[in-house]
Image (cartoon, rainbow, N blue to C red; front, side, top):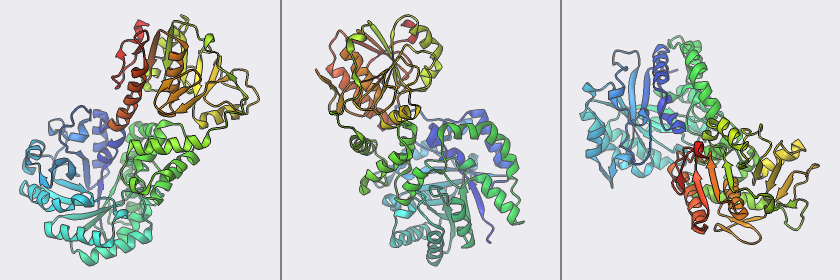
Length: 538
C-alpha cells in the first residue's frame, strides 16, 4: 500500500452541527490530542467572510488572533478550507474579502488551504490557486458531489487541477453514495488522466467510508480525510480513530497513536454525538443510495416527529431535481404530503370534541420543546401552581410532574406512542387533531379539527400552514379566548431558512389577531414576530 497522508477535519466538517461554535478550551484539547495522535494535517475550519445577522463560532472564521495556541513547530500541519462561492462576485474573485480574511503563509499558523467547489464554479479554481500560491500556501482542490458527476466532468476536474498545478486533487463522495467498486474505478480513471497527487473524502451514509478509503489507498491515493467519531454533516465521515488504529496495526510504516484520542472523545466528543446523533442510520443510508442532500435527513432527525419509515417516505417524495441541494420549503412540502396520507376519515369519530368552555382562564402558557424550556422548568412548575392554563406542544417529557396541563399532538408517530402505552401520560387532557385514535383508554383524550391552508380560526376548525403542534396549541388558545398567551421554549432555528419559514407562520397568526389578544415570547428566542418579555413576569 501507498503511505498516505491523513487529514483530520473534525472542527471544519463537524461545525455544521453547532455553527462552528465549539467550546474553546475543549477544542484546544482536541487539537492537542490530534497532534499527539500524529495526524499529518489538521483542518481547523473555514475562513469565511463575515456573515451578517448570523452567529458563527471561531472555526467558521479561523480568526488567527484566537488561534495563537497553534504552532508551526507542532507535529501536525494546519489547514483551513475556502468555500469558493463565498469569495466570488460573478465569476471573479472577491479580492476585497479575500484580503480581509487571508494573510501570507509566512505570517500564519496555516500551511495548507483546501478549495472546495461544486462543478458549477470549477472554472474559478485556477485564479484561486494563483492567489494562494502567491501567498505561500500549499493548495488542495476539492471537487464536491462526486456521485453526481459524469466521467467527462471528473476528467475536466483533473484538467483544471493539472492546469493549476495544485498539490492534491480531491474527489468528495458528498452524499456517501459510492461503493468500493465505484471508488476503485474512479481512482483508476483519475490516475489515468492526472499525474499529480490524489485525495478522497468519504461519507458514511451506507457504512462504507472505511471500506471505500481502504480501496482508495489500494489504488494509490495520496491523501485521505476523517473526523473524530465521524463527526460531520449527516451520517458523517470516516472515523479518524478507526483509520488511525487500522493503519497503525496493519502497516508498520505508520506511527499513529490513536489511544491519545480516547479521553477527549469520552469527555467532549461523545456527549456531542449523543446530542446531535451523527453516524450511520437507515435514513442516511437511503439518502446515500439516492443522492439526497444529508441536511434533509438532519432536519428530519432534529424534529423528532417521524419514524424511520416515515422519514424514508418523506425523502422518497422529494423531487429528483431538488435532492442534491437542501431546501427547507421542499422538505416542508414533502412532509405535508406524508401527513396528508396518514390522516384518518373525520367521519369515523371515536373521540370527544374538545369543549373550549373548559378552558376559561385569563392566562395561558404554551410550552414547546426548545432547550430554553428545560432551562426554566422550575419556573414553569411554579407558574402552573398559580392557576395559569398550561399547554404543552407534544409530550416533551419535561412537564411530567405537572398533571394539570393539556398536551397537543398532531403527528402520527406520537399518536402511535400513545397507542402503545394504551393509557395517556399523566396530563389531565390530551388533544389530538385526529377524530379517531383506537386506544383502550380514551377518557382523557379529546380532538379538535384542523386542516392545512392559510392560517385562520373559523367556527369549526383551526387552519394551519404546517403540521405544527405549537401553532395548533396557539390557534386553540386564541379560539378559546385567552387574553394573555405566553410562549416558552419556542427557541427558533440556527438555520436561517428554516427559521424564516417558521417566522412567517407566526406572522400569519399575527395577521388574524385583534388587539385584545396579547401574545409574548417569555424565553430567549430567535423569532421576532411577537413581543419579547420574561417568564419571571408572568
